[in-house]
Length: 141
Image 1 (tube, rainbow, N blue to C red):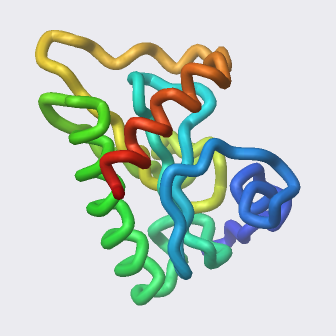
Image 2 (cartoon, one colour):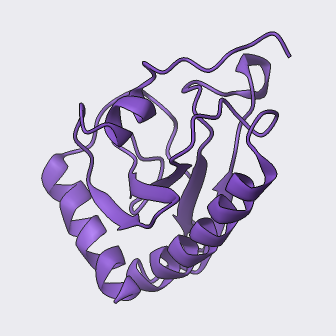
């Protein structure tokens, strides 16, 4: 693969504390935070702390840690948001829909009869993100 990891991507900056995030979960290997352009109420992103562009270059052990964190967060998102189900998404390279080139999993709570919102690029109200994060953090406790 000729593509390389860009250490100045937005998620790398979040990991270094250079950009803020509304954190919902963190462990030694991963960080989960609210998506600032959510396609559903309670939309969370889960990222590894290792510098990996996507599924094609992440070390297998880091991918295993990411999968465990996604399961933990998914359970909390479903419970905290009182969702009927979940959609998990992970995109690789531009042709696959990837926009931020640090591997990440989208955890989207879903309700029967409610479609995902389109990705418009509009940022959500920080107070709304905080309220959703509080519900998810409470479900983790």
